[in-house]
Length: 167
Length: 342
Image 1: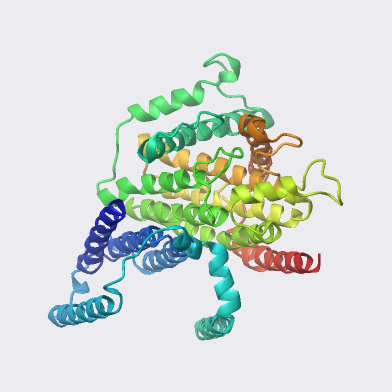
Image 2: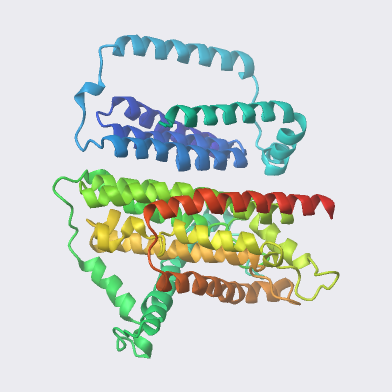
């Protein structure tokens, strides 16, 4: 358990540092690259919690596709080599207050709901994280919500194509 | 590993496995680079090149080239984004290292037998695109940026057929673990005949072809080498790289080719399994058997590479989206119907 806690705090510190980097950097490309570190850290935390399948989905979808589309979009439109100073605006104090408020609410909620429970990484927890179990719960227990979300995403996709087409 | 598996504690095991992977990847890149790039291509195209170093067919030439790369000055463009420029080749190579972790070479010989093995392999192999984009952007060079953009568009487009090709095998084997897929092929039978097990290439031939075409594009090899097209973009995203950083890209390219050939051999040709060989003997023979199979697959990949001319950018995209992806989806559908019916 000690090793897991140490690993958690190291990864968490790296994630927090990179997350501050995302909003602090003056360069859009650097912000996207810091985001890679944050998302990879999240994947590492999933692995610590024995949710292996979710972790690699995180890597494939978020790092392997979404961040690459971010980078692709930035580089296709404008790829600034130097920092853009106009990235900053005068809302930083409001943003800081909002961020602290959200942090407080989340911490309170999580501690209040799960504060007295310790996670034991044992075989029963590992069994829940196996892809077979994940597949069973998606395609058996939660098949309706899954299908509805699929339809929603399909509709969004068709809508995006319809808006983007110019003919 | 046979009876060698003394319990030496997880720390040492981890260190041993890490060193093993770190040693295997450059060696793999060297073997493929020598056999196919230096020798097969030169003999096919009747331009032999250096035949003297090391004696037999100039096998030492690539090692010499590697030593030469290490001695070269570390040149960085004045306008480059120094840190991103320096990290980019490492990102590409790390993605290659990570793929090797799940490839099994025997019943007990596997670095880590993940439950989501093949999915993991494809997920980490997609990380190299980030390294390519970083390299192209940080070089502060128009050709490099164009090459990186082409690479990103191409790798995103061909990731889908690659995944769809693998789904057929996963459905048939009923597991995503590479070790499980090998066992499923070993335990299978052709109409009740258990002679050679059941290599999935028999029913997943379409998937095998899809996998080969898509991995050719993922490796940015001819006919899909637009990102490095030397007649248009000099060398694409690699144009500003020299010395050991260029060596990293070389190891990444050929190491990944080796890993994809090993994956194809494992998914479709039965991996390390050999008919009538079980137990400890399979552990001993696993490595040469898998090596022979993956060299066969790599031969096909490089044969195409040295034979066909480059496609145009729009042809590349329409091939992926209009042909390969629909074929992949149809393949999954047919596999699913057979899986339920039989």
